[in-house]
Image 1: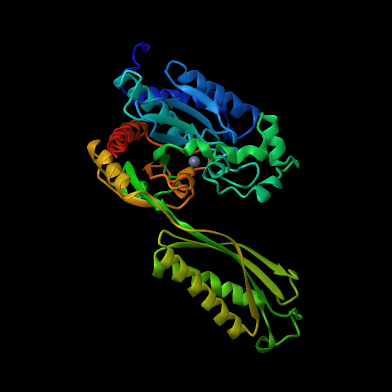
Image 2 (image 1 turned 120 degrees about the vertical axis):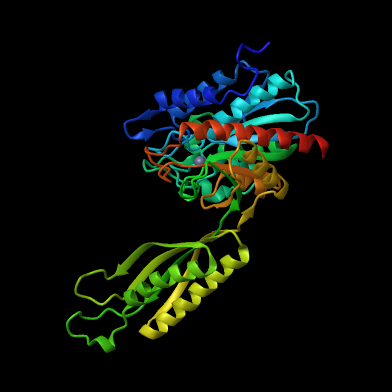
Length: 418
Ligand SMILES: [Zn+2]
């Protein structure tokens, strides 16, 4: 028998649990649920406690991901995921809203189907989504999808010089075995993730909820212009090879390129050599981050930026070189699940809206592993995340878990009938 009050979805209970979590994981600077720290372990124990009244099997996999499994009449599984970890001084909702909404849905499904739903339902709390400590996000989900670069991850260190393998050891995990957790996806038939938007799109549209089309592809490059150092007083303007001037022209141009192609782009860093007040810049290195949901459009944005770089270099009598720092292809979510997500949102009385995700999420890794995947976004007040001011209206928190539950039910039947 389930304890009283556990038989139907209770959005208010989820909000109360989020507040309870905040009460012991946040200080005056925000949430401190950083992965692989003692507080994170405490959060995990708290989550186990919350789920202990349910007929679920709970375990932690080889990469530190936590799974709670409600066995169904068939092995095919509906996965609901999120992450309890946060950045230092983070918000109270990023990641844990998803997990606690999933816990609430597990309770509802368990009650409705007397502990035996038609398909297996699994809640997953991914380990170290944020990558706050080691500078590399999506650790647990990329280990699970098989995309984790072991050689790169093995060498990662935090600011105190502790390596990722040592940090894992401290919480009882063997880094070298991390990818063994891939077997957790064996019977996965769909993956659902709810998340706060972390941007202002839904806020500006005055909408509570949105269906996520997919995550942006990213092209990240360092662009270096090579000119010649020369005296700031004695060098006539027409004789200069000014590496900074060419780089500076790029900043306006990349905005025009993004406008034309409908993506986003950022020059996030600029360094000059010799970097002194009395010399023309000999070398200027900028970083460019370009993102788009459409792979062809992203490729066009990159090509346009390269052409512009050549043009400005030629104009300024300097040369330019490019170095690719990182890239990932756009990841599109599943069309049927996208339709279900729209329907679920509409059934709560909210208008339907589709939008892309700028940030990457664990859902992108699960989709890359070939599991049909969808995300639902709920509005962020202020459009801000990774900050203690991160917030969502309480009515929207309640509405999002209601909509997400309807999505889960649709996905469950879709899997059962497949
Ligand atoms: Zn998150």
